Image: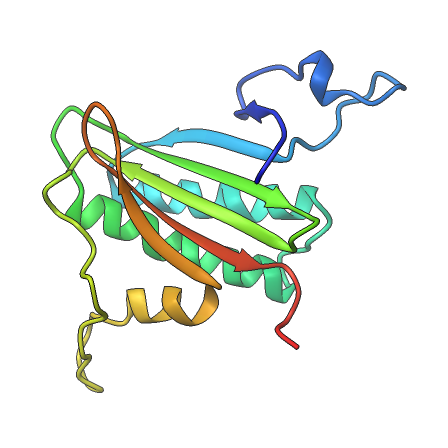
Length: 164
């Protein structure tokens, strides 16, 4: 189970976010909205890389790279397949250091457009169709759940350590 505080970049640190010194510490969980647009998806990916770096995983690390790829794919899918006019999307990142996992959740408003139950076959020369294959390879597990009152959440759990 992931624990920690929920914060976004525009919220000031709370008492739960500060150490005994009073200096801000990196929250274990981040929740942030992003626009249902390619620019919004790019923002979410960059936010994830910065969040990972704040937790000690530099952008060039395998863990940060895997999280960036999965966030990029899930947010791009939310923008492309989950866009509902007037509704944005939301990303939630959670670090469970004990389990060595980062849980990524991407919410959109399109409940009827669900990820496929099985990965679609890809054409080696095709220009698309490999995104969920990447998620499947990089994540320990992934799936989706309905979101109330509307939409869905697609989630993936990415290891912070290489598989042994």
